[in-house]
Image 1: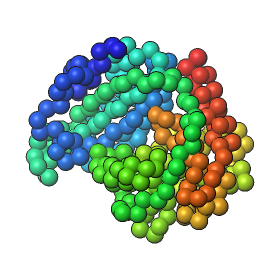
Image 2: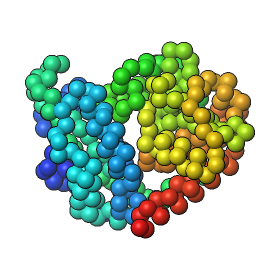
Image 3: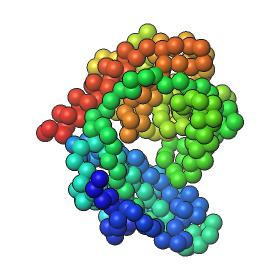
Image 4: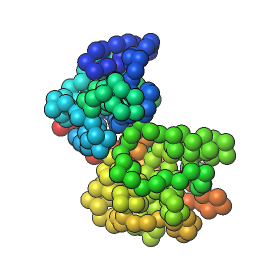
Length: 286
C-alpha cells in the first residue's frame, strides 16, 4: 500500500504520525466543521456542493474562513493529496475547517485553518450492499433542532452514541429522532422512505443534516420522473413503507431489509444506484 499523506493548513505530512498541533480547538472543543467526500477514478466528487456547505457551516460557527478558501483552492489541494498518496481509483477524503488555536471557551481569534486527509477504499464505483441492513430507533438521546443542525460539525457525540447503540443491539444502524418522535436521519446517513413509487425524506427545516448525497439523490430521482417529498416522517411511516434506504457521500445508497419485524425490497435503491454511477461516469468522462 502506498504511503498516505495529509495537508495540515499547507504542510504536506505523512499520515503515519502526529499531524495536528497541541491546542488544536477541534481536538479540545470540537470547534470545527468537516466534509466527507467520495473519490472515484482518482477524482473527488461533488466538490462544489461540499465546499459550499463547509464554508456555510464555518460561518454558522462564527468562524472567518480565508477568502482564499474557494472551491478551486480545495479542488487543487485535494487532487494534490490524492496524487501524492497514489489513489488512482476509489477513495474518500475528509476536509476540516477548525477555528485557529488560542483561547479556551472564548476563542482568541475566529480565523480558520484547514486539514485534509485521503484514504483509498475498495470499490471505485458506488455499489449497493448485497445484504440489506437491519435498523431500529435510537431513543436514548434526541436531536434538538438549532442553527447548526444542518451542518457537519465536530460535535458528533450524538452520532457516536447512536452508532455504539447499534453495535450493542447487533444492528447495522439506528435512526435518530427529535423531541417529538419524528425521525431525522441515522447515525451516519440521511433517510429515504419509498411508498407507492414516491420518495419521502425529512425536510431540512426538521433539523436533519443537509447531506450532499441526499440532495443529489433528490435531483436524480426528479430527473428520472420519480416524485420526491420533504416531510415529517414518524415510525408508523416506516412500518407502512415499501422500501427504505440511507444515503451518504461515501457509501452512496444503502438499502434496508428490516425494521423490527417489517421486511423491505430494494427495487428503487437499485435503480438509483445505477443512475448515480451513470451520472458520475459521464461527468468524469467529460
